Length: 421
Ligand code: ASP
Image (cartoon, rainbow, N blue to C red; front, side, top):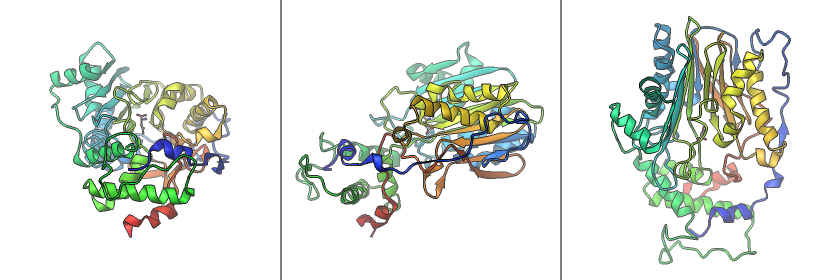
């Protein structure tokens, strides 16, 4: 490869991004204290039992809801949902098949809170154990601690009977390899000088037009993805994952008929992260928070930003003080915005979705941006007897650039990609 991510950064004009503020989420104090039916997108009035989760849990909501509606424990019901993506090798944001850290090792984070007994458990940076959601529950039930990390967490899981297994699927390994090669104008990964496709790095100052650079780079990545054996139909998606290291994660909150509630969040975290990095997902109060008296909330998105506003805890506290789920979530998003002094150029490069459930069954899904790209809006999955996906309410109109900061591949260019012709 003849280009690096740094090259990309220096050749792009980020300031030209068109931004627009949406009018949603600006009614902080509702006169009725938020007790009435929600009128926002991604928000609904109280009904019990109910489960809300990230949309990658949609396929597993039925089994969780069945357990919940038959009187099953709220945390066990939520675990039935989140173990779906954890076990699925094709979900590369959670559990088995998750995209690895920069050294090619999958490291998982999870935490849970059990409302009825007011307990919590958490694990961070766990290797070789697939169902870290269940390990976080085991920490809660079988230790006097709340959080275990790294090797200690892995050894605890093995002691509890969890099998040690290799979590890196072939597909995730190849995507990681592609990511390594992407840096190869400055290291020895990827084909070298002798490769027929090798190109000299561009001399500084002689930049091609932006559109041409995109075309070349996307094509190069897609071609290398094919050379590495990635399925043809997935090559472009693999290229996208390299340019925009993805996040994913699943959160699920459950409320039963009696008003008991629990929440859980599990993830492989930010792809290609530094080894040992923990995001918000294992942080009780950030990635997940449940208070039996009030409600439950969880998060997916830019973990570093969410930790700084203690997102899930902030939302539950806001509801305690009378805000509706929608307004409570919007307030947490506005705190993220405040941390950047409303600098829209920076805010474009982060995103956050909150999944919020109040004790009376009212719920909301809110996000910083509309979605990742046009036609790909953020969604919340809900089951209260009928299962559905709903678009979240968003603070800003438009699409995040995802993170780390990188401009999007224009759709037109994707279509033009030589590789796909
Ligand atoms: N919040 C997760 C993390 O930062 C990633 C995600 O939700 O997409 O690890």
